[in-house]
Image (tube, rainbow, N blue to C red):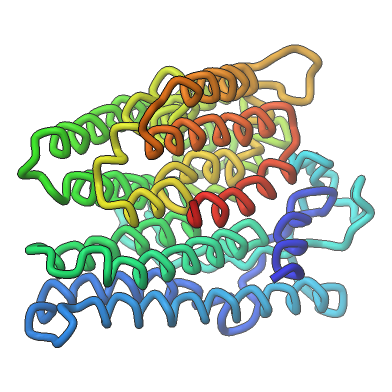
Length: 415
């Protein structure tokens, strides 16, 4: 586990990033990990009530196998990195500095003095329209590997704990079906190769949270909390749509013969090499930041998160530790080249991301002081800790933010 974390946190710190379609079988077929809980969702809805344990056994088995595959993928990634210098890989290398932001000089020596970090990239054509191909695919690097392990492990623990927590519930099968879909949605978001795919997974996470927070919808406070979470996140999602659209057309203006690009790797490389205008990057960064503020509970779009504790406690653990609220932080880390250049994080002045994160840290901690409900205390604690992560990313501390995300997931899940 320690080796996996070290490999993940060094992926964008001082190491050049290349894209290859090589790698082991597991790295090339990482799509199997989100597929398993997605299949369990369908099977539980279809046959769950006919099974002895109401379908919970399918959910636990699927997430358990996904966790094993995530661990094996992590081991394969470490081997892939260790053996990369012995391979002849034809890639366009983008040099990354200490903050994970590329310079595009193609050199092999980074500030960290590391060797090339080769992300495994695989795509397939989804459909064609207007002379452009829309693809789906996977992008596996150290960040994705770390998140796969975190999400599958926490989800497995939540599934197991839920068997007794919701035992006898009238919607027992329904609960486990959407718990599996929730896990699958977050895993899909983690391995997404392009922003269109990320957007679909992002919305699926929001829908699943709405269903699970309002699991006991007969009580009005629960249904109100679910609706509040759903609507608040839709406000931020407008920013996500703006950001994705701006980046698509900005990439198209920089790529000859291309109308646009949804590829996350291409967009980060273009942003880091200075081929995209600063105005476009700033507008896109502000739009994406709005989505982060709503999804990750940043001030002033944080109000839904304490109310979301109205759902079953295992759902709250999954939301706070490994799925919904960390999705925003993950998106910043995944598209850090865009944010770094858009907000000029390398400069000496304060930027929007650091300001929002710092303010959220203080506001969340202060609000936790005056709560009398222990679940509300934990909710505001999560808000404050997410603020720390966003603030760290806002000042260029990419590795520290990801390490905090990793450790916070397990401690908050146990709480």
